[in-house]
Length: 152
Image (tube, rainbow, N blue to C red; front, side):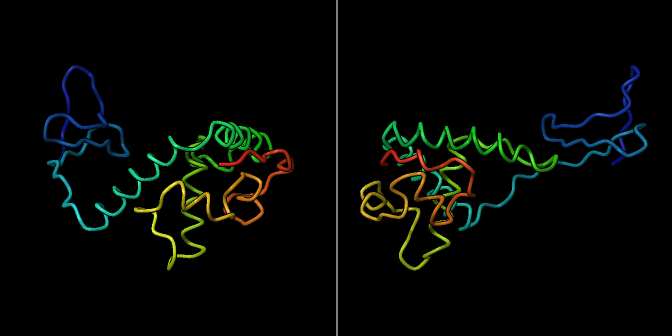
């Protein structure tokens, strides 16, 4: 439905009550549709369980490893910067989840991110340090990473 506004408002982008608005290219009006909540699927539930488990593990990781992943994030953006206008600002937590998902992709038959524990990760030598994450291909390589050796 095409919508025009009073009082000199040309377009509106956003959600109000049960309606979603987005501007037309002309900038003279907006289009509105009724907001419908998407149907939750098994995939939504799976991703939710994995996200909760990864957050729980993040809080159990030693502070030295978290300091190293923070240092990695700073060096990453010093070296690579933002690659395009849609490159997300990656936090240390985002790099941690990226490494975890890459570990899963490396061995999907033996790694279940919804049930993995900190003890399982510590028993597996692949992610003990940020340096090993880089060497195993779970994180993108940066120039200076040999000092990122704090254990998880």
